[in-house]
Amino acid sequence: MHQFAHMADVHLGANRHGKMAELEIGAFVRAMDMCITRKVDFIVISGDLFHVGVPSDLNTVRQAVAKMREVTEHGIPIYAIYGSHDYTPTSTSIIDVIESAGLLTKIVKPQVIDGTLKLECVVDARTGAKLVGISARRMGLEREYYDMLDRDDLERLDGFKIFAFHSGIDELKPEYLSRMDSIPISLFPKGFDYYAGGHVHQHSEHRLPGYDRIVFPGPLFAGYGRDFEFTARGERRGFYIVSFDQTVTDVEFVETVLVESMYKEHNLTGLNSSRAQDMLAESFGSLDVDGKIVVLKIRGELSGGKTSDIDFVHLQNLLYERGAVDVHLGRRGLTSADYAAIKVAGEDVTVIEERLFKENVGTVHTNIPELQGDSGVKLSLELLRVLKEDKNPAENKKEYEARMIEDTLGVLQLKGAFEK
Image 1 (cartoon, rainbow, N blue to C red):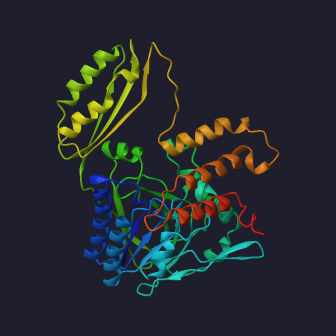
Image 2 (cartoon, rainbow, N blue to C red):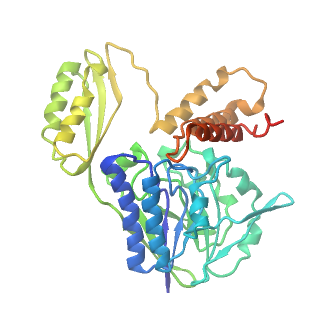
Image 3 (tube, rainbow, N blue to C red):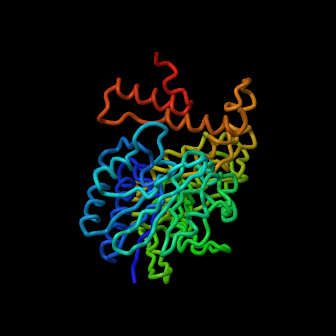
């Protein structure tokens, strides 16, 4: 009997300050320590180990690498694929750096032959398990890999085999991700013993005809505000430990929760802004928030005054003074009868950005097909992601500017266009 751990969407570096950064790396350390204690044979990370492909927070990288070294020194190999956040258009990802240090093995071994994508499997030395996978790209652009995939070749593999991926699946998407790019299950190879998923930030287990054990572990901690809301509303966070011999015999979800969360909603309909401020202050003052992550949703329509009249910074500080570890205050659902609000629907910043691009791409007049419609939206989002990258502490200004130019040209597929 053997065991392996399956985790994904760790998003190290998403929380960059104070206690939240400590909790984020703490969840990763706890998961790795559990793997050592449980003496798993190997670990599979199905993408998004880090929040960006080239992290600027080198302290988080240092802590993660130190723990991964400890794991490998216990004889536990780590196998990984790129997630959409690990991918970089031109630069070497931190995943590649860690692999070159001998602390993990990328299990994506692609080769294109006559327009067909063939994947070479990685065989775990101790258990004989065979691992293959497809890494993600930004905005679901990995779909072309699945279209090219030689599924018959993979289905002929014998022994215990794992397929790692970092994509949503059309047939299994939760409602809140209905707009997310995804892959139909028919493009996956059949007959694998375990499909190690990533990208969907909720843990779940599924079966479809020909596809047993499709598993998404969700994040160890949280990478987005929506994650914190789901956690506060009862979503469990952690990873899976899978027992197997010739087939999977048991799948166990192991939690990595380090701090308690609280979720509260407040409906301010019928109150003016002054009364709403007083009511919220009174309510917040009675909450037991000490040592907790607090998620608050404020909604409704004020009968008078502006939503901006309410001093939300002061209200948040009341909770911090009472010992809250962190406060996430959502007020997108709050409007005023006196002032028209500009509404941007979306679960988080990335969804809002995508929606804004989709709403405005038609106003750009161009004859270049790549800049029109969905392809224009995807290109714009990828370019925005590159332009938001921070300067690494080890870079000087000139090196940072050169990297940004190189990555931007890589996104636009113009690299070398200005080299004479």
